[in-house]
Image (cartoon, rainbow, N blue to C red):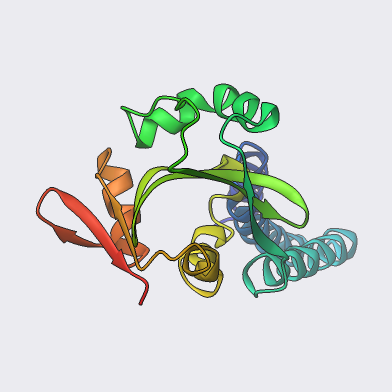
Length: 203
């Protein structure tokens, strides 16, 4: 492969990274692009290109380590289902939500509803709504916004963060499958199929 082709590939990867809505994918593609530029710099004997892209690769590795290495502050804050911020959040992201859960509608307030804002580093990154029936919680919404979809927020919620459900007396989460991508997501989170529902045991 000629140096010119390597340069074009590296440039294409950098441009592609800027088109990513996911922070993790942006960093990963940028990392591969910077490595390609290091190769390009070596091939054309350009020390500035090599040094610049070694630094960029190092920064990408640093940010990916922080993003995926458990150093982020993750949380779930219970809020009223009709809290103005939550309602605005849901309306703004409704089209994206329905890509995964096509039948979702913003629910009217009810005593058995539990709503949470999913937080990352003190900022809202998603929303979760369920309807509690004794020790069962029927999940109506589980949504993380595009920039944070790969940042393990949901893995935390159904793993180390599951105490937020246990404190409510919930032993089992039950949800209807949405689109194919939603079913794949549920299985990745540890839900198992039970009839026409997916179930996650928390006990």
